[in-house]
Length: 413
Ligand SMILES: Cc1cc2nc3c(=O)[nH]c(=O)nc-3n(C[C@H](O)[C@H](O)[C@H](O)COP(=O)(O)OP(=O)(O)OC[C@H]3O[C@@H](n4cnc5c(N)ncnc54)[C@H](O)[C@@H]3O)c2cc1C
Image (cartoon, rainbow, N blue to C red):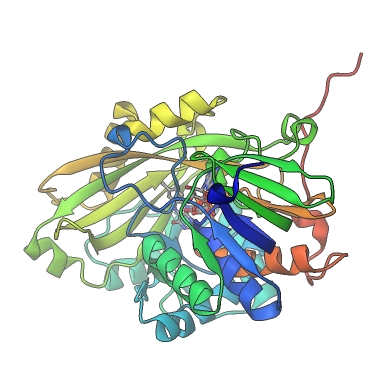
């Protein structure tokens, strides 16, 4: 263990990873738990990622993540349903604005089974949305060109996009205002000491001790010695590539698209399966961009830490950039982007397509596996993480099965 100079204190619960889920978990812990809480994790680099020398990055380094209830999966729908009403409360409490209520629209063939499934989940959970015929779509959004058999499922309120950067800032502000200690360090290793507490050692050799730990390290969960080796090697959590493309919008087009909602386009026959877009979003360079991303076969799995770092250092995949740009321009005929800016990001994928929120050991909880869906619901996910680390047994109304740890299948001899 380090000398006194390197010791950063002892805590009852330490959350490792100050991103979307970890920051929310820390905030909820400060509300439901009386002990000492610490949140450890680096801030966003202030220099380009490839020059930062960082060994970990985050999925929240952006200005826009879609938020919506409409979903084919009832668990994701329920988590969003519980998170969305809290955005304005958190904004008010912290003074950080991050929610833009622009609405959300799913576009797909009226015969697509996914449309039927989304309708079914919406009926089950119960929230406001409309089904728009092709004619109604054209009337409300005349600039959109979609196939004649397409319909729309539309949430005009309680949906739109959030700035994930802003949300993390707000969660951290609320957590630290409530007494949580924030340590801007990257954790290298966690071990158990003689009295059963955890010793957390950072990259700069600082030491924190903690009775309990929540691991919320996103795409880098398997790449540091935080989770015990025997479990880490078997955990089935994969890291997938995401290429996003930002199409710069001029003032006239911003005006033209002033009622544009966030959109998901379902194309089951296409290898992408679906792609999504955000309406013109203001970025830190002072310009507005339409942002596009994808699903399906364009996601490539990155097995090693080196692969993930290399991907974060780059600007996505040029072929995917081309496919996404063409897809967007086909839906918005006449749109001429001022510039096209691709970027690379990564997200975690789990076999049940949900976040793993489960005990790794009696005093260590894993909170990871966003599957590209978790930014909008990270407040509720963080709350479930806080409930899980502070209770002996599962303490939530959605069955634990939905969030359980998944392990790789070992070949039978
Ligand atoms: C391109 C893209 C588009 C997306 N679009 C949407 C969308 O439209 N809607 C939506 O809801 N979701 C979306 N998502 C998903 C969403 O952004 C993620 O699911 C969510 O941000 C994941 O949260 P997290 O806390 O698991 O990870 P992160 O937010 O990445 O946080 C993990 C944190 O852990 C830190 N960390 C890692 N290792 C260590 C360590 N050893 N020590 C200390 N700290 C460490 C990292 O620095 C990071 O800050 C998208 C994701 C991507 C990549």
